[in-house]
Length: 404
Image (cartoon, rainbow, N blue to C red):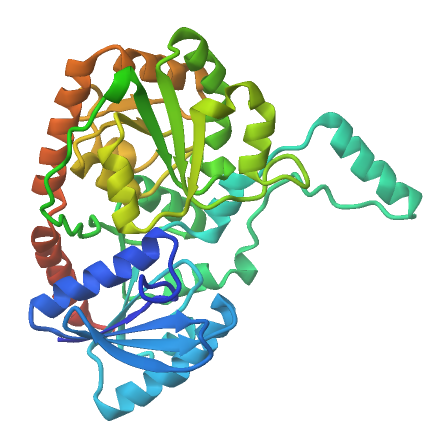
């Protein structure tokens, strides 16, 4: 098959999320299966580049934003397709990168891989304002002679959603988790969605069991410092944990984001709020794969207290590194983890559960090792790139055989 992958993100250009990781992994697997693969991704360098990486061709297309990429990639794709036609296209729903291409070439089969739609991201990150904030907003509008529409009544405008439009015209749709598939069907309309994990390239590196050095228990949070990742619930658990176990320290690996306190980033907000504990809290920012692996080797417990997650690659990395993982049971992580078998599941929005889990694991070295070992075995068995690649290849062939 001749396959085109259209993703704004890629590890060699615009990265920072799971979509970029997936774009390289799926292209690498399909190229290894001897398919003719080309990937079209964004670039902020200002000039077009075409390079060979992992046995596939990568087009880096200058774009000022993801919206601009949607337009620019159509031109680059058209040129490549007219020279040597593609059999099918795969893209993400997020950003609707392939919308213009599908409209221009409706006969080319399109597969959409769900990640996390923007309507869901906005909903998860939305903070309901207090009564006084609402009152201030309304009174301010009335003083101007207006009656402002309440911004806290979160609604999704399907008439202006290119992601939903793309979902509706796609020939096939797949999702890494059943949870996301159910959410999307409910919001965007009933349609067959194949639950298919993302391929995970387990590099084969042997985990370093460098745990509990000097008596400390090192807990690592991996993810953007934003509400949907559960950072504020984790923050509320920190004083409880620190008071009961002085050996626990926290590390935060992920890009800093605006906080719920205007004018402060999340990092500054947390350091200010917990200034008395600042010596036991360290912020690493966004790490490269090599840097994250080093931090994982130095970690005892990884925590992912998200309000909801689809298929977080960082959780897979932690499990592969044989770490005891504490994860939210709301979303795809509950499909990866069985409670107290290969991880520890907690409820979202539950700081007391986070604290209890950290304290239990920090006090039980054998349990940490047991969960970590089982976690690695689960990843190597269930998410092996070759196994998932064969399932993906089958979906591609089934899509090509679909009739209009």
